[in-house]
Image 1: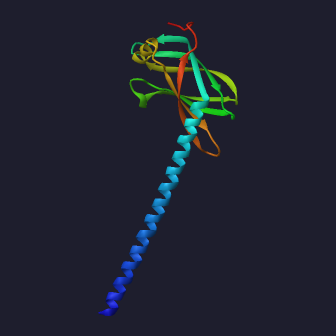
Image 2: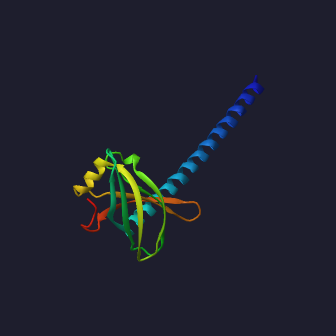
Image 3: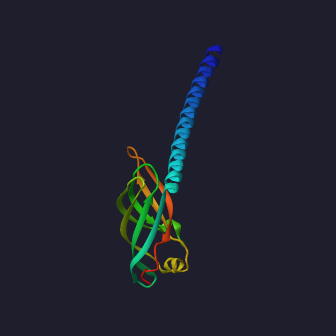
Length: 165
């Protein structure tokens, strides 16, 4: 009987140690993920503070419920390092999760500016909000060290009154 209790006690202790080991591993993974996420969030805030953008609508085609818009986007990097942009999403006012995304290979050198021209298809209602002086926003995805990626939101200012109506 004593041996059976000891064997059961040992099995319980082993099971408890395995469970604690798994808990510690999961906690470490959660902390590493949180630290990585916080680092990316901090990097995004730094990039957003260093980057400004303006736009001109070069061409617009009315497709009924949608608008095809060709935009010249002027990006200004006031930061000390070059920014390598890989993807651009034009944020939808009415459905933020469904913005128009385009690949974009643009490098904005430190203390410099770069222009790019992109075509987006957006909802007509969103285009009307722009015309009512609502600032469109871009979500920019950047390449980082290794395979890391970061994103930031940049408000677009209207560059001039020479836009296509």
